[in-house]
Image 1 (cartoon, helix red, strand yellow):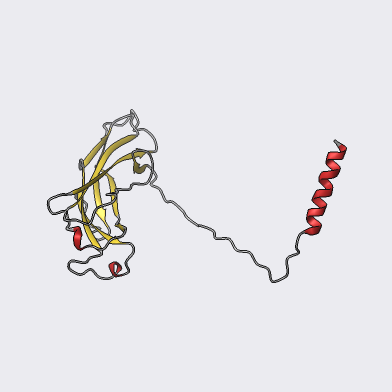
Image 2 (tube, rainbow, N blue to C red):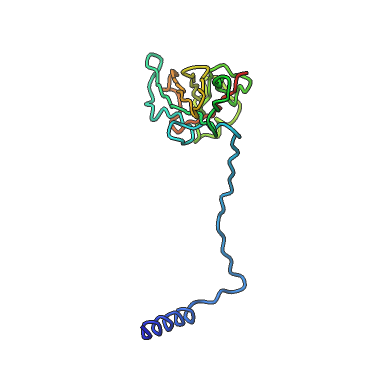
Length: 187
């Protein structure tokens, strides 16, 4: 055991003696990702598995979707921090709505979202008619209201999306857009 410790000590000293000494002008950098998440005090909205919501149309061939509609959907759940207490008079009713970045005052359950080509700087400018770097998607909810019963902590629903734009004139690339799913407690 003593021999093992002695050999280990010699190896450590040799490694330190052979290492290069940094100069005064040596510098190292590391990127630090800084992020925060602000959550509601009572409700959290995620996909059915607890992940962020993503409505993905996947790969769409560059063809005419006038007669063929591209469809996608994602199931969501609204989770309460704690169950609605037995002492509550009745269940909590939630008004569900979609609010887009382009039309933030709209809370009517159906929303049009503009998907922009992420690979194009032209899509970031003011839209033009028949812009080859923009696609319109129509979104809708399965129901406009959800009811969280007494002693329950979750309600589930679905966001449905369709694209029926002629894609043959659109540029290839990844398209994305944003929309908010809002749960409002009804009085």
